[in-house]
Image 1: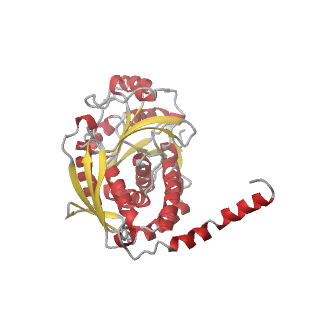
Image 2: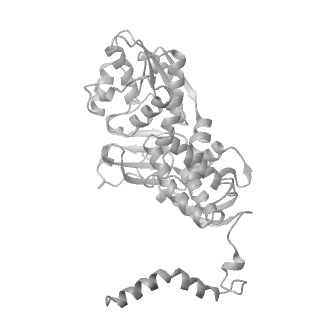
Length: 406
């Protein structure tokens, strides 16, 4: 272990990474630990980090504002693709390659011998971090303490932290594993580990971005969203950046109990895990974008895009953002979005997103053709179409009749 003299640590100030700094100092004799916090919109979680990092043994702390990069280079491509993994809107999955990319850049700038992360050996994040590191620095050594040390649980981590005088913001009673950024907040562990347990949505302090639908206002909130080529550009007619839109919709959606998801998902490493996700603004954007696509995309493109969206989501979930296939699907998606421009209205009410109208200058919907009233559509043409469309079925039936298998 002695040959490693400088380590760059992905640092959040949470339980795992707080414990890791003194552990690295103990186990890699004489090493310098440089902490790097990638700010992807976790809010006040970055407050007081420098003092804490230095107190626990780091030589310095970088706090990198990655919010614009995260939105423009990771969230928007996923949104335009309509990518969801088993209903999950990929809040952690999209953030990890964004953070890891900057982590590698700083490690190379600092001349580090290794990069360290606090991901467990059971989860998906270890893969997301390390595949990104392999892409940008294929020879870089990676240290993953959870795969090396004798600590076996979060309770033992707390014991270690207390023994080393490491300040913690959590207690054993509130020891959910959480991940927060501008797109979502996830909750795992404790009572949620048993899928038979109902999440404590009404318990004060459990939900942070949303209120329980039961506690949402009794009056609906109407919103209007404008998109240009698949990208959100305005709310209620007021133009703003995509990042500002997400923050605004987080507020509006959260107040109305929008975007709470409780799922048992299939992790990459083979096990099932249960989590509760809060994604208020993201849920609204996905819903509105889908409604707009319903009038702007032709049938063949829409159906093929839905197939590729599942592949796109798996690539993101599995940490394969920086791959040729992900880039190729993004190129396809961008082509499909050329005419996805228009306005969507939604009614937000107690956890529900109710469509309230959609329009686009590129709409393929024709009221004149689809109407139940008089139109230019010749219904008699359908007879010939059905004869040709049903010809294989007719031939197959005739064959069976000839062989007595009718």
